[in-house]
Every structure is written in C-alpha cells, then in structure tokens.
Length: 362
Image 1 (spheres, rainbow, N blue to C red):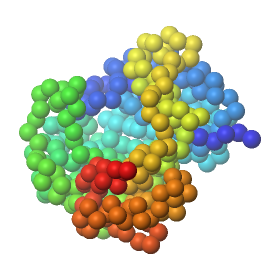
Image 2 (image 1 turned 90 degrees about the horizontal axis):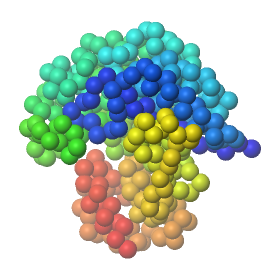
Image 3 (image 1 turned 90 degrees about the vertical axis):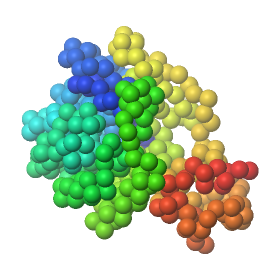
Image 4 (image 1 turned 120 degrees about the vertical axis):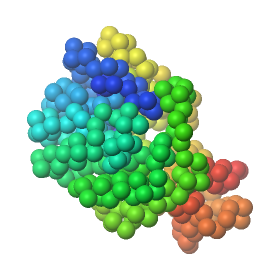
C-alpha cells in the first residue's frame, strides 16, 4: 500500500525581489528554469511508492514557470492521489488566461494570490509589481477558468496604513470570489531591503487593533478563523498547510525547501546552482526533535480547535489538571476553556508565544 504524504516544491524564481521578502529567490531565467524543473522531477521520482494527497508550489513566484510546472505535474501525475489538493502561489501581475488555463488542465485546483492590499499606494510602498485592478482581474481569470478554491494574502501594519484603508482592503478582498484569506503582519527581516532601510510602521498597539479588526470583519463575511494567520469559508481550509500544523509528514523539493519525513526534519540548502548540478538534492538534517510536547502545544494553539486534553494525555501522559494549574497565571480573556479543550481567543492569539511559554514550563 502506498504511503500518503504532502509535497512542497519551492520555486526560487521572481521577476524582482520585494523589499520585505526573506524567502530564497533569484531573478527568473528561462534556461535555468527548465533545468530546475527537470531536477524537480528527478527528485520526486526518487520517492517512488509514495502518494501525495497535497502538492504546494511556493516561492518565489511559481506562476512565472507555468509551462515548467505543467511539465512537472504531468510527469508526477502517477504520484498524486485522485482529488489531491494542488496549490500554486501566484503574483497577479504575471497571471493571464493562458497560464491559468494551462495550469488548470495540468491539475492545479487551488491558487493563492499575493494580493497584500487593495490600496494602490500601499502596494507601491511594498514594492509590489501589481495594482488593485490587476489583482482583481487575476482572481476573476482563475475563477472563470473553473478554479473555485482561491486564496488571497492581506498584509497589515504597512507604512501609512490606517484602519480606514485596511477596511477598504477587506471590503475589496471579500467582494472577490475568494474562499480563503491569509493575513500577515509585516515584519522587518534583517537581511531584506526593509530590514536595512526600515520604513516607518504603525506601533504595536495600532497593529493589534488592525489584527482584531481583520478577524472581526472576516467573521462577519462568513470566514472562519481556523489558524492564527488564516481564514476560510467552510470546507476551504488549506489541506496542505494543515499538515504542518497537525505535525504530519511532508517532503520538500527545491533549494530552501524543508521536509519532515520518516520521523526526521531536513532541508535543502539555499543554492539553486547546487540543486541543478546535483543528481539528487543534498539535504541537511536539523537538530529538531519533532513531535515533542512543546512543539505539539505550539502547533495546536495555532489552530482554532486548540488542545484536546484526551490527546495530550494519550500522547504525553499530561492530563487536564496540568493545564488548569498553569492557566491560573494567564488572564481569562486570552483563552477559552471547555471540559475537553483549551484554545486561544483572538486577544490570546496576539500573545500566543507568552501563553505557550507558561503552558510548556514543565
């Protein structure tokens, strides 16, 4: 019987580098893209006997390689389960009817658009190459081509962002045929352009208000806040990303891709040339010990479903009373407690690291 797991493919090509982005990417080149795609296929074939029930093309800007991704999906079709979730990240400025139609025919059934904002001045401040009209057109192209599972990213805490401009973005996003929305707070990573040339950002109190505003607005529009940064219409949660949060196994292919497979965590170096020139990608095993109590608590509290006390006792021998004692140190407005379950409130999510630290202090 074939083993079933998830597949993440890192596509390290972009037209240009966003000033806030710390993900590994290089400037797009057709020849290198073709060489990269061949190596992806070779590496996936190494895992003969495995079936993938989710495939996720992240990056980078995967849609730049639409033709190559179609070739990859055709080559690995025997490895993918029937009705597997196949997600592709896309930049609106390089989305057109041709590449969406081709990707849909090759099996892509979920697209995640990096929209970020519905306000053009905010998009310009972020260094994005698209505007709001292009993003709207891109989403509608995907929808009109039969892809009904569509996600869009929102970024909060932007330079000069206001609650009013955020409200405009939320209305703009929820008027589009989106089934999933991811909301991220802009962080200044040290090795990025913004990290070295920091813009003026809203303070923490304002960003907290923005975060709660996003949750409230999306809830009223029928989206469930199922994970710290993710909201979905019923039944449209990201199956692939849920593997990460449920500590399930997945295999990563491509430079900078991480894996958790056969009880081990490993990753591929951030080096496209090495990936292309090696017969199989070279992986580095990390020192992480997957499946420990601290990690389990952290991952469970990322999810709205939270910690199941019976699962905690069965997996780690830690009963409900263990949590009850530690909750005495945590304000009641930060968590929701039932007979069987512990989860974080919207306010609790904002200080989740502190809450997790108290709960895991054995």
